[in-house]
Amino acid sequence: MNWDRIEGNWTQIKGKVREQWGKLTDDDIDVVAGKRDQLAGKIQERYGIAKDEADRQLDQWQRNADDRWLS
Image 1 (cartoon, helix red, strand yellow):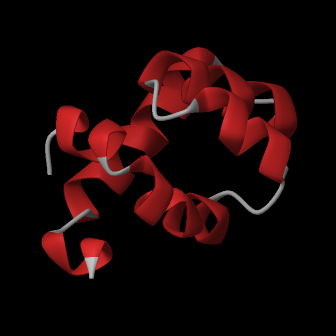
Image 2 (cartoon, rainbow, N blue to C red; image 1 turned 180 degrees about the vertical axis):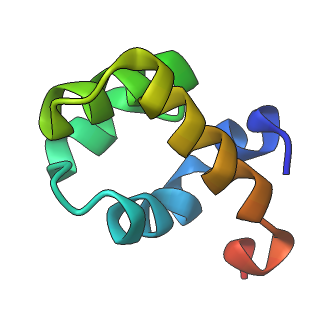
């Protein structure tokens, strides 16, 4: 799924973000509002990882995203 679709359906996809990155708070997820760079920053902050690692995790998560998440 491309990031525009993820961002456009953020309300429905937030649960999948919580499943993947449980250390993110509801406030973190709401503030991000689907913006990929902000989500990467929050992942870095909460997990204490480098930007490259956060981007790698997001790339993998995005590859796994599919339309079933929108049901």
